Image (tube, rainbow, N blue to C red):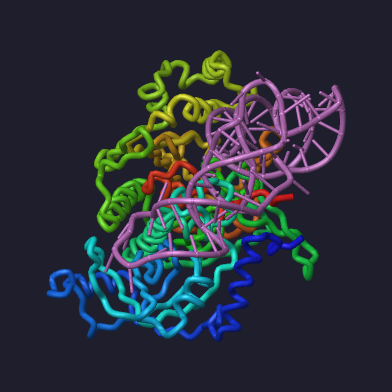
Length: 495
RNA sequence: GUCUCGUUAGCUCAGUCGGUAGAGCAUCUCACUUUUAAUGAGGUGGUCGUUGGUUCGAAUCCAACACGGGACACCA
């Protein structure tokens, strides 16, 4: 039993062998391609206006994968596809070397093969600009057949496990990933243009910090110690601010050992950036600028559909967390600001909460349950309770709150930002409180004395932010599963 | 982790009340020199996800397991 143990594949292996025996290398790397489909179409767009609707003096060589093949006796039409598009080729027996058409082309060339063709541009009776082929050769034999040409491959499992097939068959998938690439590229340019330095910090951490999440554990054999795949780069980026860099960013993968669903993949991409001598207020303005920049360069309409919602990116709102509970969540102010009333209310609403939770934690629970999904237009939720913000700076006027915001769009968290806590003693105490919560909350933040030590040398007042790139791409591409914006989403192995 | 739906040819899908497995595309043979999911004629192709159970008989009913989709839970 092997992966080639299939009659269709065996037939194609036989064809490859026959091609070889006829002197055509089925895996040739000798190619003369001198144009792409897109350029061919552009350069020859005038051919339709010529008298004969052809120009035999122009000669082009194109290459691509055969997607359609229509053999009609002594002539054939086929469509090849390269990255830039589809092009129709016209082959006729008498325009090709003696015997090639009947003995090789008709017998051994088929849909899925990658071929190269040279010839001149002409327009068919039906008005399609095509290539009139005088030279034709195989470059790469495909020994597995492609899925059906009309329906393509729709099975999600095949599309995710064999993304290359999905990309071959579904051209809109390519568009999504090109958009993703543009977003990453624009993001990098946006921050570079503003003087931010791109840095790379460790992916393997001795302590998994910077977020509340379960890490993946790996082992370093030479040192005989465990390492954690990072759950966030935050604490390293802030060490760089201590070191004197004043604006840094990192775009890369984080890893969280948690459940997988439509919005969670075990590895995901974020940008985190830190900006000295700024506060969370500056980040709100920077975030608005960032979205404007993306929309302008991606040429997106400011009213963007997402599922059955329409998000108005000209309508950024701002509201404090407690205000959002009363104004958007419709919760009575007395409930929103009183621990025992909030606890009772959540239990009445059949939301499972631990009796030991503090008011701030309960406010977080109420926000998740009654507010988050209602935030369609971009909304900055500000002033988070200190208990659920262990790395954020306290508000000077209201020390139980932090100078923090999260940005919600289309009912989902897109960004998390705050003025950074730079008081080493306060940071040390907050870590200790987190460690004390470990028995109730196994995702509470770990103690990181080395980070506190860094703060003890003095970190300039700084604001920092993280944006989930995958969710941002989902939002801008109107995709509803993170798997559709990841080229190779995590899948269980087939047993 | 829970609930739920699904898994049949390379792909997209039918399969009635439990009674020898079906279609379209692809593939093979033949015809066809301007087609557009080309067309016409004929053929090949199946461990019905896996393992068990019920039954004279299972793609079909039952159970467990595997994988996938969706929802929920978890996840700042």
